[in-house]
Length: 307
Image (cartoon, rainbow, N blue to C red; front, side, top):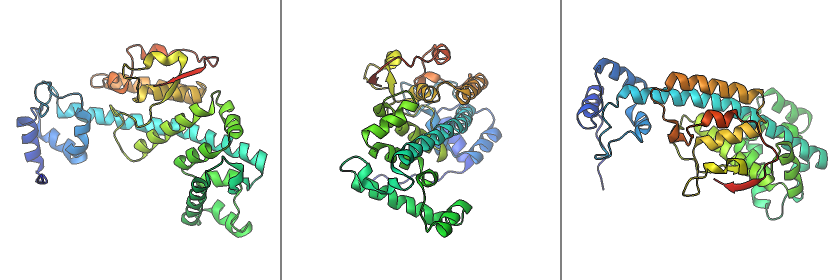
């Protein structure tokens, strides 16, 4: 069994970074200030791709602690912007799913497992139990208290979805029967299979953002499914699970609306600020990414491949 590493003081960390990892540090006081704000374990993730090809314990010549810190700052700003734009998509999904179920099955139809796909009783039961757990945890909120006291804890679907996590919204969509899924997917001008994948991708990204994870140069667990018009972004291995395909998905779901445009313009301004350290190819971006993202949507294109 390998022994756990011993803790190092800030001064010892700086010396190790300089002597063992060959990191460029010209100002020890500035380095200490950075390490006091962000511990090196978190910052080291931003060094992936910046190590020497001959020695994986050493950084490439010229890579500094300030470089990693600026990548961290870029990642933080990007995640905040993504949280906002994904929030708009999440709200749309809650709206469209609850409307489709309410209009077809009534306010409380979602509690009846028979309106969903066959063989989903376990998933449905878990979903509803989780929902009532959220009701209990949020019973002091005015709208929850109102429905508990006035309606004997009966929550119509358009109220219930406000207590669903984004992950539970994904589960709810996946257990809906095919016709109901098509109704929701039609609003987003795609097929249910694609929308299901997109929701999972966005849930993953949203959770990374919400829990202070690293998004920069991180492979996603769920590879976004793209339309034929974007199949040039399929890698040689047939997988592309970095951030750029997710940008294409966000643009398409939002139909390149005002929310997308505000996000995209902000992203371009952030890139200008951090262009000295950010390598967008680490995030799956092609060299002509601006040309691609500026391109008008083509909703006539048909789904083709998963990348």
